[in-house]
Image (cartoon, rainbow, N blue to C red; front, side, top):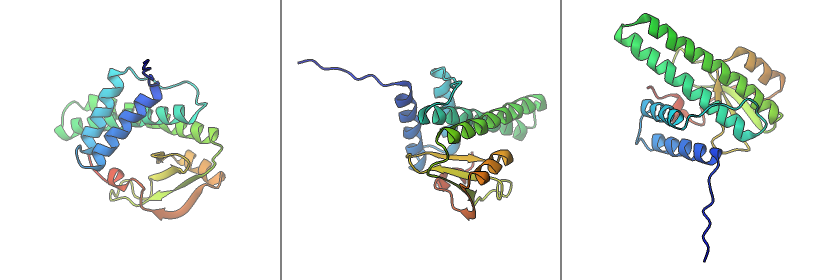
Length: 184
């Protein structure tokens, strides 16, 4: 009897790891900081790099996750440096890196939405416990895909969402409230 081991592609492996960490975080097995650190470590170990073109949902989500994790990780490190009151130049570097990655994430979101032709997409501001993010952070849900929830504060992307008639002015609770309202 022949047994064939079906090999996993880059997306299968990446999303399985991501989903495993999401479930661990939802169950309280890891906190948000650990979630970010484990994602960052995984990307370094696998030498993950974003795709140049987004011509599939998988590539778009892959790039979004890459840039989102890099941005959050760098922002977390910047905050830790600031909290310790040391090395203001390192704080600025990590903060600038985070801003770069957030900008790339927003461009990726735009490219992914354009690829999907804004079909079955809804976006809205989310209720935040953070006063800094309240009224600024919005959620984009890709209803045709499981765990496809994107976030942004970008004003130019918000204008695009409104122009494409997928943005609702009604504020809602995030579909991943357990995550967006937890601190790291």
